[in-house]
Amino acid sequence: MKFARPEYMYAFWAVLVLGLFFMWTHRRKMRDMLKFAEPRLLAELASKVNFGRQVTRHVVILAVLVFSIIALLRPQWGFQWHEVKRKGLDILIAIDVSKSMLATDVKPNRLERSKLAVKDLIKKLKGDRVGLIAFSGTSFLQCPLTVDYGGFLLALNDLSVNTIPRGGTSISSAIGKAMQSYEGGQKKYKVLIIITDGEDHEGEPLNLARQAKDLGIKIFCIGIGTTEGDLIQVADEKGKKSFLKDEEGNVIKSRLNEKTLQEIAVTTGGTYVRSSGAQFGLELLYEEKLSKMEKREIKAQMNKFYYERFQIPLSIALLLLIIEPFISDNKK
Picture 1 (tube, one colour):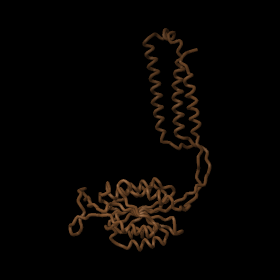
Picture 2 (cartoon, rainbow, N blue to C red):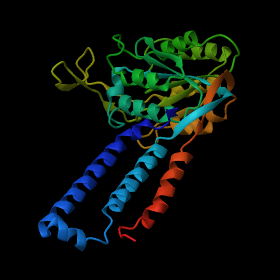
Picture 3 (cartoon, rainbow, N blue to C red):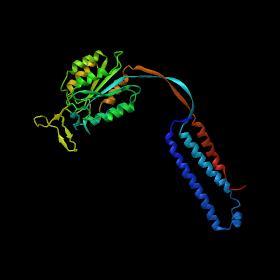
């Protein structure tokens, strides 16, 4: 036997507390009655009261709670084997971790807002494999393709502008890393989502986008930031913040560069979405595009499906609840 909701075990403490309360009230009642009259006289005064049935009522009430909690725990025993077929896409998410992603034209900043949006996307995935690429001047496979969404989220939480030491922004590197990360096979079911402000400083992203298309990879781009841009604040080792400056001492202002991202998306048959503070665009992208794409059967496996038995303790609890009002304190 197993329980589907073992977290309700703590509720048995409430039964223990209530049982102790019943014992305390019963003893106090008997003690107060002995103060009122002598035992011989008390027996005559309380001749019509059945104290044993009062205890029985308390026991029944406690039993109702016990069986109700057991029903909440959802006991299960006995099972059947069922074949479960899982279908999905292979989705790689590449997130820009360059210092320009610290700009606060999207609150709290571009990088943190991107991470929050990806977490919301993961909640919608059903059977899709997902992987994570961090990129700035170069790229790194932070999490390979997996259906372990918990492990993916741990890798996502670790992302920061310090994840990759080399500065700059190379979308080309992210696309190249994605092509290396996908397994061979059919030229479909492969999706790359790039989240960046679009300021590509090196490489030839369009040439790599064409190569990705030949491998069956569709690239969807999310442009985060505003065309007006914002200054970039960085913190030193002591936590003191200052504005990022170039080699000549000029304050750097980061702006969203949409043109490159639009061309990459169009080249591979994907879509470009501009992110805003309220609507990031990932959920819309999933609903309108990814959820409607053809999915491959990734794996079929045999799973155990246990029989639910909560009906048994629940029926006992209801039966005792019906009986309880008929337990009278009066002697016949």
